[in-house]
Image (tube, rainbow, N blue to C red):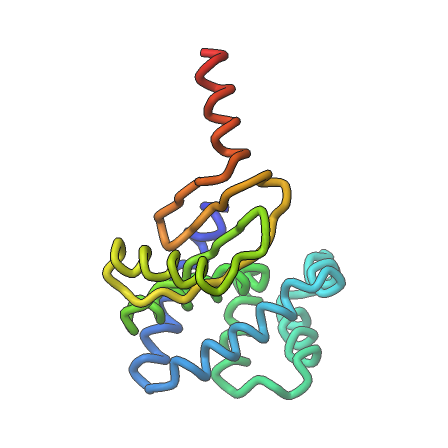
Length: 178
């Protein structure tokens, strides 16, 4: 995964700088969301990874799949990524772009995976604690992962807090074995 991040980072940075300079961060964020969904589709991945799909025909196919929802700048990005065999990076470019956008806006997105559905009060408490710890506004994205057995795992930027029962049992097992 770090190889994808390394390859995607310059593209995300360039898009961010261009969008920020033009004052259209939100529009680019929406476009990257859309293009990322298209690029993540299994059939699209398979189509674009076939050797028979030449670099320019890959870009053309991708643009046609987007059904006229891309502007000239987005089409240029698709062509550039296709020429460099990097269309598969769109989901990672989107993640890195959003992180830069959040940073510039003084906020951070926190992913919370919990063993059970959190109440509104629990979400507010987590958000308030993270805001205090990180010194930024926090946007929570909450999901349920029953395999955690209990507790939650919180990811915000480089910060990972594993308060899950599964994580604690894993640490305990590791300690006992060593």
